[in-house]
Image 1 (tube, rainbow, N blue to C red):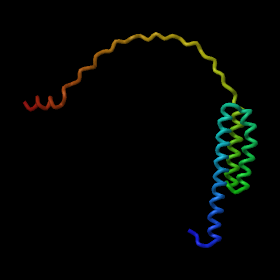
Image 2: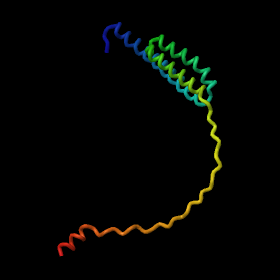
Image 3: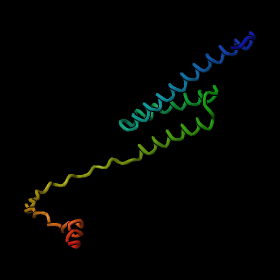
Image 4: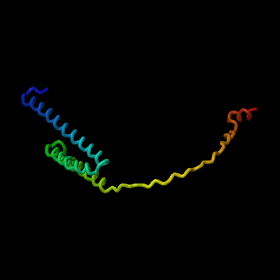
Length: 127
Protein backbone atom coordinates (compact mmCIF):
# COMPACT_ATOMS: atom_id res chain seq x y z
CA UNK A 1 0.00 0.00 0.00
CA UNK A 2 1.25 3.48 -0.78
CA UNK A 3 2.23 5.72 2.11
CA UNK A 4 2.77 8.98 0.25
CA UNK A 5 -0.27 11.18 -0.41
CA UNK A 6 0.40 11.54 -4.15
CA UNK A 7 0.85 7.76 -4.52
CA UNK A 8 -2.50 7.19 -2.78
CA UNK A 9 -4.16 9.60 -5.16
CA UNK A 10 -2.48 7.90 -8.11
CA UNK A 11 -3.96 4.52 -7.07
CA UNK A 12 -7.48 5.95 -6.98
CA UNK A 13 -7.02 7.72 -10.34
CA UNK A 14 -5.76 4.53 -11.96
CA UNK A 15 -8.69 2.55 -10.57
CA UNK A 16 -11.16 5.10 -11.98
CA UNK A 17 -9.47 5.10 -15.40
CA UNK A 18 -9.42 1.30 -15.45
CA UNK A 19 -13.20 1.28 -14.90
CA UNK A 20 -13.75 3.85 -17.64
CA UNK A 21 -11.54 1.96 -20.09
CA UNK A 22 -13.28 -1.32 -19.29
CA UNK A 23 -16.65 0.31 -19.97
CA UNK A 24 -15.48 1.67 -23.32
CA UNK A 25 -14.00 -1.68 -24.39
CA UNK A 26 -17.06 -3.70 -23.39
CA UNK A 27 -19.42 -1.25 -25.10
CA UNK A 28 -17.29 -1.41 -28.23
CA UNK A 29 -17.32 -5.21 -28.17
CA UNK A 30 -21.11 -5.26 -27.76
CA UNK A 31 -21.56 -2.86 -30.67
CA UNK A 32 -19.33 -5.01 -32.88
CA UNK A 33 -21.19 -8.17 -31.88
CA UNK A 34 -24.56 -6.58 -32.70
CA UNK A 35 -23.15 -5.34 -36.02
CA UNK A 36 -21.98 -8.82 -36.98
CA UNK A 37 -25.44 -10.23 -36.22
CA UNK A 38 -27.07 -7.43 -38.22
CA UNK A 39 -24.86 -8.16 -41.23
CA UNK A 40 -26.18 -11.72 -41.28
CA UNK A 41 -29.83 -10.68 -41.13
CA UNK A 42 -30.31 -7.11 -42.40
CA UNK A 43 -27.58 -5.42 -44.44
CA UNK A 44 -29.33 -2.03 -44.52
CA UNK A 45 -29.50 -1.91 -40.73
CA UNK A 46 -25.86 -2.94 -40.48
CA UNK A 47 -24.86 -0.18 -42.87
CA UNK A 48 -26.50 2.44 -40.65
CA UNK A 49 -24.86 0.93 -37.56
CA UNK A 50 -21.38 1.06 -39.09
CA UNK A 51 -21.13 4.86 -38.92
CA UNK A 52 -21.81 4.87 -35.16
CA UNK A 53 -19.40 2.01 -34.51
CA UNK A 54 -16.57 3.64 -36.48
CA UNK A 55 -17.13 6.86 -34.56
CA UNK A 56 -17.04 5.01 -31.23
CA UNK A 57 -13.87 3.13 -32.16
CA UNK A 58 -12.19 6.39 -33.19
CA UNK A 59 -13.14 8.02 -29.90
CA UNK A 60 -11.74 5.03 -27.99
CA UNK A 61 -8.51 5.41 -29.93
CA UNK A 62 -8.27 9.14 -29.23
CA UNK A 63 -8.85 8.50 -25.50
CA UNK A 64 -5.98 6.04 -25.54
CA UNK A 65 -8.12 3.05 -24.63
CA UNK A 66 -6.96 1.10 -27.68
CA UNK A 67 -3.96 1.46 -29.97
CA UNK A 68 -4.40 3.25 -33.30
CA UNK A 69 -3.47 0.14 -35.27
CA UNK A 70 -6.00 -1.91 -33.31
CA UNK A 71 -8.69 0.67 -34.09
CA UNK A 72 -7.73 0.74 -37.75
CA UNK A 73 -7.80 -3.05 -37.98
CA UNK A 74 -11.25 -3.27 -36.35
CA UNK A 75 -12.71 -0.64 -38.69
CA UNK A 76 -11.18 -2.30 -41.72
CA UNK A 77 -12.55 -5.71 -40.82
CA UNK A 78 -16.03 -4.33 -40.21
CA UNK A 79 -15.99 -2.51 -43.56
CA UNK A 80 -14.82 -5.66 -45.32
CA UNK A 81 -17.56 -7.70 -43.67
CA UNK A 82 -20.23 -5.23 -44.78
CA UNK A 83 -18.79 -5.03 -48.31
CA UNK A 84 -18.88 -8.81 -48.67
CA UNK A 85 -22.43 -8.96 -47.33
CA UNK A 86 -23.57 -6.30 -49.82
CA UNK A 87 -21.97 -7.97 -52.81
CA UNK A 88 -23.01 -11.46 -51.92
CA UNK A 89 -25.69 -12.54 -54.32
CA UNK A 90 -28.47 -14.52 -52.77
CA UNK A 91 -28.20 -17.97 -54.20
CA UNK A 92 -31.55 -19.61 -54.70
CA UNK A 93 -31.22 -23.24 -55.59
CA UNK A 94 -34.20 -24.80 -57.31
CA UNK A 95 -35.19 -27.92 -55.54
CA UNK A 96 -35.10 -31.03 -57.68
CA UNK A 97 -37.98 -33.44 -57.32
CA UNK A 98 -37.15 -36.29 -55.05
CA UNK A 99 -37.00 -39.60 -56.83
CA UNK A 100 -38.10 -42.64 -54.95
CA UNK A 101 -35.40 -45.23 -54.90
CA UNK A 102 -36.38 -48.76 -54.11
CA UNK A 103 -33.54 -50.58 -52.53
CA UNK A 104 -33.22 -54.27 -53.10
CA UNK A 105 -33.17 -56.23 -49.91
CA UNK A 106 -30.10 -58.42 -49.86
CA UNK A 107 -30.07 -61.45 -47.68
CA UNK A 108 -27.22 -61.44 -45.27
CA UNK A 109 -24.97 -64.42 -45.56
CA UNK A 110 -23.65 -66.00 -42.41
CA UNK A 111 -20.14 -65.06 -41.46
CA UNK A 112 -17.38 -67.23 -42.84
CA UNK A 113 -16.04 -69.90 -40.59
CA UNK A 114 -12.60 -69.08 -39.35
CA UNK A 115 -9.70 -71.43 -39.06
CA UNK A 116 -8.92 -73.11 -35.83
CA UNK A 117 -6.85 -71.11 -33.45
CA UNK A 118 -3.12 -71.50 -33.41
CA UNK A 119 -3.27 -72.96 -29.89
CA UNK A 120 -5.26 -75.92 -31.14
CA UNK A 121 -2.82 -76.39 -34.02
CA UNK A 122 0.06 -76.42 -31.57
CA UNK A 123 -1.64 -79.14 -29.52
CA UNK A 124 -2.09 -81.33 -32.59
CA UNK A 125 1.54 -80.96 -33.58
CA UNK A 126 2.68 -82.05 -30.11
CA UNK A 127 0.64 -85.25 -30.28
